[in-house]
Every structure is written in C-alpha cells, then in structure tokens.
Picture: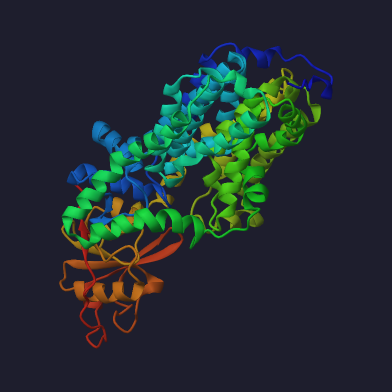
Length: 576
C-alpha cells in the first residue's frame, strides 16, 4: 500500500494517537453523542410521528403484522422498523424514549462492525480510526439521532458487507457468507434496498478474474456462491410468506391493496418511476456528499492517488469497499427519485477505505487548516448571529419570523462552547477542531435545542387551544391530516383516509359533522366556504407554519351542495 507520509512534513501526533489504543474512548463517546437527549423530545415530522403512531397502535391493539395508522393500513414500508419501536415501547412504556432507541442501537452496531472488520483487515488501530471517522461523520450521527428507517437499514447493509468481507478476505468460513445474505434479507424487509451488499461481489469477481487475489480464498463451489440467494429469500420469507397467507385467507380488499402496494409500487415503481423527490443524476455528488459527508468529503481529493495505487496493486481491502461505495452511489443516481439519506449505507465502507491512510491524512497541513478554519468560522458565525439576534438587529431577527422560536441562546451556547474548546486545544492539535465543534453542536442541540424546539415541532399548542373550546369527551375529525395530529390528540380521532383527495374528505367531513359533540380540525385554506361558515369557527393558531381552525356543528351551511359520501371513515382513540 502506498505511503502518503511524504505529502507534507510529519508533525507530532501523540495526542491523537492516544485515542487509537483502546476501544473505551470510542465506546463512551459514541454512547454519549448518540444517546444524549433521548427522552427530552417527542417525535417530529416528517416521518417520526408516523412510525411512532404505528408502533404505539401495534402495542395498544395487538395487531402487529400489518402496520396501520388510526386503523388505515400503512403499505409504504415493511413492518420491521415499526416492530422495533413497538417492542421498545412495550418494554419501557415511554414513547419518548423508545421511538429513538432502534436507530441509536443500530448506529452503535454499525460502529462496532466497522471497527471489527477494520481490525481484522488491518490492525486494531485502523479499526478504531474507522470507528471514530464514522462517529464524527455528519450524516451518520444525524440519522443515529432520528427515528427513521435509514439508520437500521444501514446497520443491516453493513452487516451484509461485514459478512462478505470476512468470508472473502479474512476467515474463509461459510458462516460469514451465510450471515451476509441472511441480513441482506432482513434489510429487504426493513427497506427494499437491503440487498445492496451483493454489489460487493462485482469488484470481488473482477479481482478473482484479473489478479491473484483468488489464491487467498479457499476453493469455493458454485453452489456455495449461489446458496446465498436462497438464504436471503429465506430471511425475506420470514415476513413475506405469512403476509401472503394472511392476505389470501382474509378476503379483505384492504389487505390485498396492502400486498400489491408494498410488493410493486413501493419497490420497482418507486425506484424506476419515482413520483416525488425528483433530482438530477448528479444530485448526490454535488448536493449531498460535499455537505452531509463532512469531514470525509474534504479528505477525498487527497485520497484519490492512494486509492488508485491500491487498485493497481490489486489490494482487495481497498478495492472491495471503494468499488462497492461507487456502485451504491451509481445505483441510487440512476433512479429519478433521490433523497440525501438514501446513500447513508455507503458511509461505513467509505470510512473503512479511508482509515488505513490516517497517518498521511494527519500530515496534510492544508486539510488540517481547512477543517480548523471551517470550524472556527462556524463557531464565530453562530456566536455573532446570536449576539446580533439578542440585540434585536432586524436583519437577523426577521430570519426567525416563520419558525416561532428565538434560537439565539442555542446558537450562543454552541458557538462559545466550541470556540473556547477549539482555542484551548489548538496547541495540542488543530485536528481536534472538528470533533470539538461537532460534539458541542450535538450535545447542546440534543439537550437545550430539543427542549426549545419541541413545542413548535408538534401540535401540542393546537390541542392546548382546543381544550379551551371543547370538553374532553368531544370527537374530532381530521381533514388532509398529518400523523402527529393523531399521535398527540387527547380526543377520539376520525379521519377519511390518508390518500383520499381533499374534495371527498371535505364531503365526508360535512356528513360526519352531525352533532354538537363533533368538530373538524382543518387548515383554514382548505375550507369550502360554500359549505362551512368561516365566521363560526374556533381559531387555534399556527403550527407547522399553517393556520388551524376547529369547525363546530353550527358552522355547517344548510345550502351546501355536498351529496352522500361513501368515503371510508377510520377512527383511533389512544389508551392513556
């Protein structure tokens, strides 16, 4: 492997080296950064309330196999992630704690896998460096602290890559190959892209054909290689086959729609003919990787040459991870629908390919200076913005007019703590600038920031206003709703289908609003003034940048042209 230490004059790095001796600093830091703030906030839009509601409903109703939001089946994702939240909720009884726990545990598992395979491919030090790089990658920690499926599917995909690397390059034991394919299957029934580790077999196959890397691998029959597919299908079948049997025996059109949606629309159609998040082919390279893969994205220009050298030397420890990362980015770039979080699973293998060159990276003065200056600018910038905001400078304060919160003390806390830390440790090494700023950002935001933001990121204030106008036994129907309005409701909730068009929902709501004990919660811009008297409403204020009102029975106009509605009505009342 090429030695990059000649890029710049080496300098003393003993202070950094101390972090690469033991696993304990990495473990303690990972637990602190990932778990801090857990229990201090509620689920926030867009996805967290949906998954939390589904998990809560699973526990309350005992219906675990088919995810549902307020009785309406949710066919967009398989149930694995919702099951994990539901299990944590069933054990702990605290939704605030349990909804973030699966992502947090998945993140810790991913860090361990990267460390362990790095240790086996190179040394313990390289494994620890890979773990540190992953922990301090912006997108990784962001998803570790978010209740979305992506952190969990990243863990399953990393397990798949781990198993393939151990089988192909380390142990030559079939159990690791089988484990890789099994967790690919689990990844598929968590989120359809769980099969991605099999792309690693492409660069491995090329290496076996063009180099002597095959001499390091025990002779393997074709049956052994193809058996992985059956193992993956077996893992998928753990959920897939019972689901098909239940649907076939149910004679329920809703279950049939669930089956067809999750098998076709949410897999093949979603990839090949996406209907939202449409982005150009270069989106990941130009808009996601430069920002969300910090600080790794800054290192990439200095890694091109050593990676090319590794390819020339046919070093499989570099070729397999890097080849796989490139294939994953190409795979997602070919789909018209793109979200930045889709390429998260590529990060663990990227840090694995970066870690062996840490000594050379530490000796690149320009890179060190770039990171230091960037962190200094962020810290000073947050501090200055906070001071100007506290001084009520109009150009600054108007920026917060739409978010209903003043973040000045939050910015000041992050800016000053990171600034003082950077200046105090700069004499040891400028490399500490990013970990210090990154830690200050997440520790402060995950505590003070969570508390500050929680009320404006939930409809709690809307329901507090609602209690002033109606009693606890009232019933509320939601029109064009979001899941958080069901999750946080202290009332019995009705709705008319998540994907039902607005017109039929309004027609159904008009028909449903048949007594003084019933009310319709709706955004003011969605009201049909021909059927509802907008002067006879309860104003509930703003939430999620929208103006909400409550329609009572008396707001119905008798001359409304709505006819009889046959829209299905769903209901939900939380157990409290």
